[in-house]
Amino acid sequence: MHDIEPGTPHATEPKRPALAWLAIPVAIAALAVWWLLSSNLLAGFSNGAPPVENLTVERTILDQGGIRLLVRAGGSEPMRIAQVQVDAGHWLFEQQPPGPIARGDTAWISVPYPWVVGETHHVAFVTNTGAAFDHEIGVAVPTPVTTSGSLASQALLGVFVGIVPVAVGLLFYPALRGAGPATMNFLLAMTVGLLAFLLVDTLEDAFEFSGESAALFQGQAMVILAAAASFLLLMAVARSHGHPSGLALATYIALGIGLHNLGEGLAIGASFAAGAAGLGTFLVMGFALHNITEGIGIAAPILKVKPPLWVFPALALLAGGPAVIGMWVGSLAYAPQWSALALAIGAGAILQVIVEVSALLMRTGNRGTAALFSPAVLAGLGVGIAFMYGTAMLVKL
Image (cartoon, rainbow, N blue to C red):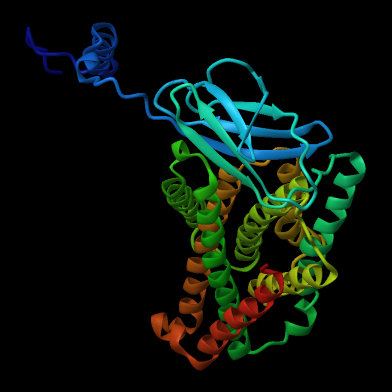
């Protein structure tokens, strides 16, 4: 053994904790913030201009008592609503909770205005600084009252347009099991095609809803960041056990489609809550036909395996069930930023599935990227996109 010389640190001597060093910059930052707030440094930059104010209407309810609107403040300072005008006339109003509305907070504004069914009404909010914010009620109709019966009807509709079509698509599984390599590649490529269309459609809807949300949510950035986070998280989970294939890949496809249907359900539920959902038979059938192809896409990766029977209803529920949940949430507590967020997460999940299915195609026959340009793959990609585009024409208003 070698003696340890004096002054030489022992191997087991504890090192200085790293957390002690972290405390120094944190303390300096806290002191800087305290000094900024206590010294009123920004007072010298004030030129007497009023604070920046922003107001967004998130919900509108029309009933026998008049008009109720849920507003969210987004200004630099708490703002106070001084006047409410409806169709250029001043009206008394009640605010809950009363008082100034802090940045990011919401309040209900109730106006006893005798609105007229089918008419367009213009509402203006005037703050105590004189800033005005306009909101248009395009077509005034009574807001439906949410009851257990209406929720049950929404659930039934969600099952019909979400779960049943996916289940019908999965029923093609026995007929497709004998497919040869070229047909398998065609079906997998068709899955990529339909998912590519869903990706574009989902992002388009997400950006549309983000534009309706309050500015403080930074809608477009929120959509991009949420989609990227969803994609990276699912990629990390999927690749933690190698490249997903078979049932694992089918599950990811069902999850991506389910998240997309959740966002769509939120939008439909919000239309129910606003009394603006004109879902005719033709439109409902279009939704159903649109989703049957999704079921075929989910079945494609498991054609060469024989999963237990319970897997098929589970996949149909995973892909179509979120439509029911979305309708319920949308009709009870809708806000455009939540629809945008749900759709963005769904877009990230769909992109992850596109990457994984494309990787599976490249591994088929060890052909690499050349497999993506085979006639069967190109034909499947085109058919998937064309079919989804054609059926989407039935459901777009």
